[in-house]
Image (tube, helix red, strand yellow):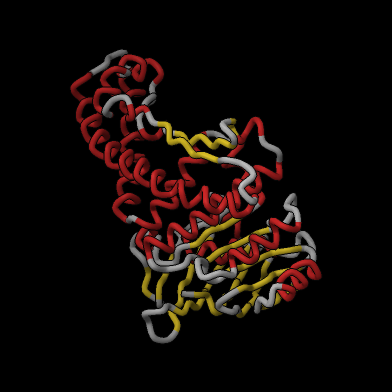
Length: 361
């Protein structure tokens, strides 16, 4: 599977552009501010039906226009000819996603068809941000692999919102009705157990792959770990909700459950956030994303698109060379790399006898 061509209309700083790509490595070079990252984000839209950088689709419409449109032509291994994916957002209207001109009734139905992995300078939020940032990251991986998981995480989040609204209503009325809460609690417990088991099993399978990539990038200099932390490891969801019912009533929100889970990143038995240098953190994040791509490939038998945005900063030449060799191997599919230094990326690829497509913005 690969993206052969993209057409962008009124998206961020693009008025109208069309680019063709090779199935292997595509380099996008240019000064800061010319739209390299925006081009990767347009590709990400075709995969995940949303921006990698913003939750507000209307903010991605070019200034002065009332819509944006992104069209991509994909070549699938098991489908003859090209397949077109289109994403269209008009001001004040719902987003439209189409596959071969047929509109999806649910955007979620598209997730997983064109898996992708983005590596960006903004990924430091996974280390320095709050737990919800890490949860969303791992949920996005599982959602690309398992539609049942995606449906259940959406349903679970809606139930939490309903339960929180009910708690607020009860608090405002100065009356806790436990039987009414129990109806929501039982539904939440069913979804929570499934999500917890999926996350736990995922980390067990994912961790060895991640360790392998980190060791390769760093020449086995450090040890890394990811620990999944969940209150469901100590008790089932229904018990937790019952034990915290009074607390939830007075705080007017659901204080326990898988929406409070976290993933602890460690290096040499210390937290990556507090004790690691920027270079170590970047190696950790790159290994995390490469492991994500390889894990998806193994489970779906389909190599995801690999979008590498400004990845060379704070990496030494040896790590950069090793990274390029890895993404050019059989474990990864079509790759897009942005860089401000044309000579650096060209020399790096040519010295390793790697075929590539160069786009200058």
